[in-house]
Image 1 (cartoon, rainbow, N blue to C red):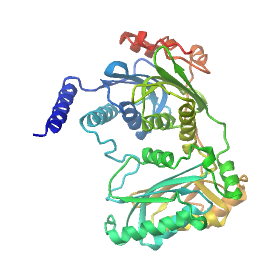
Image 2 (cartoon, rainbow, N blue to C red):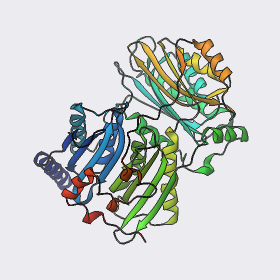
Image 3 (cartoon, rainbow, N blue to C red):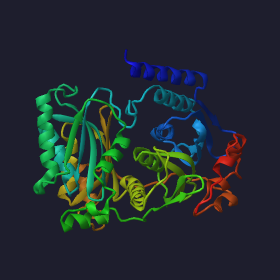
Image 4 (tube, helix red, strand yellow):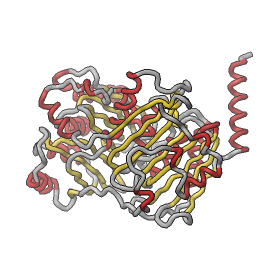
Length: 468
């Protein structure tokens, strides 16, 4: 008899019983605050629960203004202050249903990535993952190869950071519109794309992978870039011209990230301050989770131009950060997670009827006009191509207005637009709230209305930490 299998099965059944007896509770409170909705989540805690909730909120394009996180003692209790992308309260009951469904799925299965929310297509697709050294014109070459191989790009997302590029591309067969499952053809696609990624210098880090499975696109992009060590500043081992271009693309206000051990309570305290933007919380929580750390307590403030995040974490083995090298790696990885999605360059939006070779032509025109794509989001909706490109001068100079206009005329002034970035609507905070700037501490944040919710749950005592 296989006693191990029986034991695992019994554990699974016990977990299911616990879930049935204590199902996740998600409520949306629109009465406690004039400007935001409060989403309260109360659930048995499982590793990754926080990421699941934040992922659902992010995928529904909700803006998280504040958050209070606690998951000590096997129970998960969070409060999120949210608005929609236009700064309005949310009244959609399906938000609570989506969060509950996500938490139940996580508790019932160890499979973490079961669906793709960010990129959806009416028809199935084949997924291609790419990573390698970034260089001017690389995206143009990738799309040209796919077009030549009779592959139709249904959707794609591309990130660049620290001279690295990562992309997830969803393709179908150009003639049938179906996924490509012929193994010989897939091998040929992988080989040719790998040649493109290697370039003339034959970089060993170039990587391609093909799958028919779904994945959460943006979490997977974080994982790809982390595996490629884009967080290591010494990894930009390329020729000077490309280094200079990459440095120009990533020039911005550097995030402030600190990590200190709380000796008395056995946590590591992470403090993070940087310019606010959509999906910032997802990026940091995703990175902490994928690095095998667990968030026990946290506070998030993002009511102004800057966001401040505080996390009390331990490694999965129950220990805080144990050495200086580990501490520096955590800091570097969080800085990289913030920078990967930071918008560099000019935002161009393309909306036109989809056709074979459209992406190949558009990115070729970018390249011919000396523009390099720093980030891209490609989608197809109802036969329409809806694409967003962030472009910068390939050699680090400011992009000239004349260059943008020349590109628009060649592609079509009625289908390609320059879009100014909108950081999202902000609501006015009270003087007391505005006074909470710089470093903030979980134990000192129970003055506001939503902190009373945590007080009533008896969490204050467990959150009073001292840092040595």
